[in-house]
Amino acid sequence: MKLRKIRNLVLLLALLSVVSLISFKIGREGVVTGNNSQLDLSLMWKVKAKLGQLYLDKSKIDDKKMTYGAIQGMVASLDDPYTMFLSPDQNKSANDSLTGEFGGVGISLGYKDKNLAVMSPLTGTPAEKAGLKAGDLILKITDKANNVDKDTTGMSLDEAVKFIRGKIGTEVTLKMYREGKADYFDVVLKRENIVVPSVTVEFKEQNGKKVAWVKISTFTENLMSKEWDEAVLKIKTEKAKGNFGGIILDLRNNPGGFLQASVLVASDFIKEGTVVSQQSYDGSVEKYDVDTTRGNLLDEKTVVLINGGSASASEILAGALKDFNRAKLVGEKSFGKGTVQQPEDFSDGSGLHITIAKWLLPSGKNIHGEGIVPDVEIKPSEDVNSKEDLQLNKAIETLLK
Image (tube, rainbow, N blue to C red; front, top):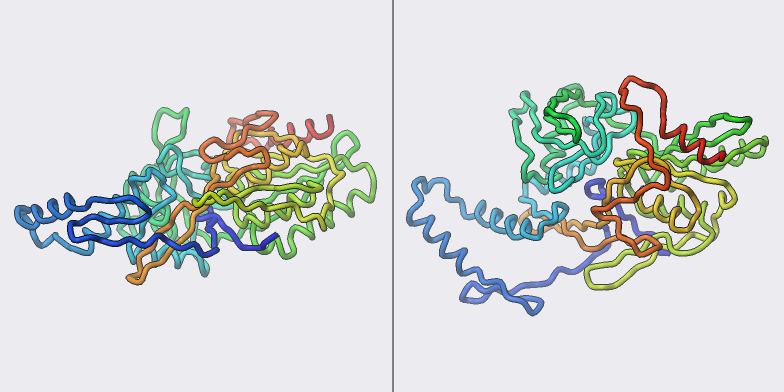
């Protein structure tokens, strides 16, 4: 299996392999040709000429801004919020956000019906502590210290990240909407240095049986290099003591991460076969198969916890375990992020994030926009102050049944 690092752009899942873009040729009449199709730009030139002739405030006519605006409009016509054109400033901000420390609030962002939404609040972060939930819509971002007061309609993910992130200790206010609530509500979040462990293992005892509660927050390089193997060792050590009841694999609010990390985890539960397939823009299909040298947990009874914050790589893992009849799924329907975006940078500093492929589960299903429905559906407690985890309790009950 080729070990190419793939990560989620929303979620920072960006395919890092090289794909050539189609080259276009512009004709004298404003017709762009390429890939046996034609794009007539003559109307655009006519509109530009009329603006130059008739628009009142000609100082606002900026050819560079018009060019970027025209390209952004063309890309937006695809009706895919994950495919976007970025101006040089936007692209620099997006690239800078992938490196170094930053102050954040612990929200993984995505879209619900083209609206900016919380994909998942990360464990132990300001967003989770404030009670934000997967699927909450973010309508407005306000940061008075930085003169930000932006409605999110039509806002790209990179812009949203830029406005929400900031100096550690400063505050950002988000205007939110939650389905089932009559009114909008504001949430004030203080930015922190976001550090979330990839995986934690805790043992729960019920009916004389010990259950391993394994929570994977994100699929990171550290998980691949050491953290998952350390978790497996803890499980096997505890099992050797006797009265072992099985594993709860908790993928709630896991926004994804490196695809290979989810394949690695799946390889400890599934004996052989294809975990996920990537169907690309050119019709080619690449399969990511089980690493048959692993198989450390093949005999362990397993239940997987998912919710609306389980996205991308975590949906791939949950879906594969379900399709192979290797685990029961408990919780709520997952987010539904099953496409791959590749970044392309241009010589002027601008960039294009383009959807180039989709993920297919072993059953052939694409989860994008649909998500995965659990075998046992259960919602969390409506009391935000309740410390009882109804979903975890149901998962343990299902495991030991």
